Image 1 (cartoon, rainbow, N blue to C red):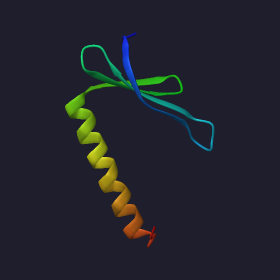
Image 2: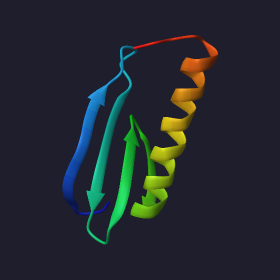
Image 3: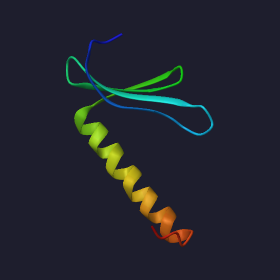
Image 4: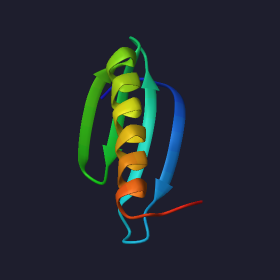
Length: 67
Protein backbone atom coordinates (compact mmCIF):
# COMPACT_ATOMS: atom_id res chain seq x y z
CA UNK A 1 0.00 0.00 0.00
CA UNK A 2 1.43 3.37 -1.02
CA UNK A 3 1.43 6.65 0.80
CA UNK A 4 -1.29 8.86 -0.65
CA UNK A 5 -0.07 12.37 -1.48
CA UNK A 6 -3.38 13.55 -2.98
CA UNK A 7 -6.78 12.07 -3.80
CA UNK A 8 -7.40 13.22 -7.39
CA UNK A 9 -10.95 11.90 -7.70
CA UNK A 10 -13.43 9.81 -5.75
CA UNK A 11 -16.88 8.79 -6.94
CA UNK A 12 -19.46 6.01 -7.08
CA UNK A 13 -21.20 4.94 -10.27
CA UNK A 14 -24.97 4.49 -10.40
CA UNK A 15 -24.49 0.71 -10.06
CA UNK A 16 -22.62 1.20 -6.75
CA UNK A 17 -19.08 0.66 -8.10
CA UNK A 18 -16.66 2.78 -6.06
CA UNK A 19 -13.71 4.55 -7.73
CA UNK A 20 -10.79 6.43 -6.20
CA UNK A 21 -7.84 7.88 -8.11
CA UNK A 22 -4.76 8.77 -6.07
CA UNK A 23 -1.35 10.31 -6.58
CA UNK A 24 0.98 8.31 -4.37
CA UNK A 25 4.48 8.91 -3.06
CA UNK A 26 6.95 7.96 -5.76
CA UNK A 27 4.83 9.66 -8.44
CA UNK A 28 2.60 6.62 -9.02
CA UNK A 29 -1.10 6.83 -9.85
CA UNK A 30 -3.37 4.28 -8.19
CA UNK A 31 -6.85 3.70 -9.57
CA UNK A 32 -9.04 1.78 -7.13
CA UNK A 33 -12.27 0.22 -8.38
CA UNK A 34 -13.93 -1.56 -5.48
CA UNK A 35 -11.28 -4.22 -4.61
CA UNK A 36 -9.21 -3.82 -7.80
CA UNK A 37 -6.14 -1.56 -7.90
CA UNK A 38 -4.34 -0.44 -11.06
CA UNK A 39 -0.94 1.21 -10.63
CA UNK A 40 0.73 3.31 -13.32
CA UNK A 41 3.08 6.21 -13.88
CA UNK A 42 1.81 9.74 -14.40
CA UNK A 43 2.74 9.47 -18.09
CA UNK A 44 0.80 6.21 -18.47
CA UNK A 45 -2.17 7.78 -16.69
CA UNK A 46 -2.11 10.71 -19.14
CA UNK A 47 -2.18 8.21 -22.03
CA UNK A 48 -5.14 6.40 -20.44
CA UNK A 49 -7.02 9.67 -19.95
CA UNK A 50 -6.45 10.68 -23.60
CA UNK A 51 -7.49 7.25 -24.88
CA UNK A 52 -10.64 7.35 -22.73
CA UNK A 53 -11.55 10.85 -23.95
CA UNK A 54 -11.06 9.71 -27.56
CA UNK A 55 -13.25 6.65 -26.95
CA UNK A 56 -15.96 8.86 -25.43
CA UNK A 57 -15.88 11.14 -28.47
CA UNK A 58 -16.11 8.17 -30.87
CA UNK A 59 -18.98 6.63 -28.88
CA UNK A 60 -20.94 9.90 -28.90
CA UNK A 61 -20.43 10.22 -32.67
CA UNK A 62 -21.44 6.60 -33.22
CA UNK A 63 -24.57 6.94 -31.08
CA UNK A 64 -25.32 10.49 -32.32
CA UNK A 65 -25.20 11.94 -28.80
CA UNK A 66 -24.84 15.71 -28.56
CA UNK A 67 -24.29 17.58 -25.32
